Image 1 (cartoon, rainbow, N blue to C red):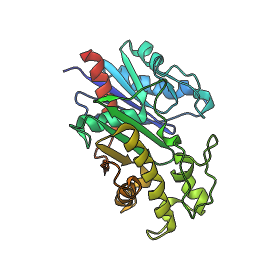
Image 2: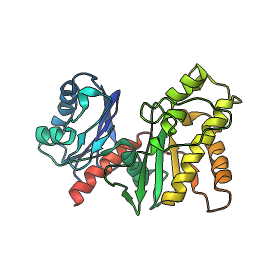
Image 3: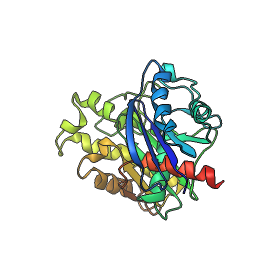
Length: 280
């Protein structure tokens, strides 16, 4: 069985791994993402794979992305804007490369070996420093003119929330109201320091449930997976599920809302992407 390569390209770090099976990425190594010099980060990535003789590489990357070319486009990391991520790896290693968003990669990983196994239609949302979402429709990642930007869904404010949001583009979008930085800015301290009975968690569940209800109406997924650092708060997943049911108000059957199960879903998804290249 061919050895495959996987990359999770993040805003602060790149994770690299190899494996034959998406369920088992191994030899995982981490390299810092240079804010000013992409070539510095990519040199580390290329050195990692040069000694491992992989047959194909999958990349689950931060964005926005031009999926046709595998390039990073209008990133807030200015040095990475228009960086030809897929091409640089393919040229250096002389292997085929597939590039998709980190959240689509995570969705593919959970579909191959995690909470989405056997589910044809589901959504993966990560809630942390930012908020992003990926969707599988009939077993395939959803793409359109570009890729879904679920973190920028526009929301109705909670009745007790006067916060304007931290998103520089939209203010009160999902990421602007419910990301980790939004919670810190609104409440004056990091989310992990807020007690369980704080109003913050009622608001957080309300905003995430709005997103889940909207996605249920638009995509009709069987499951919605909610991951990321903010979702580590005990009881938050259950609150989101209850609030989603309330918002849908019996109009349609709510999706099952669950946590992802893989330790490295985006790396697992990147391995699945690399395998798909070889399988044609």
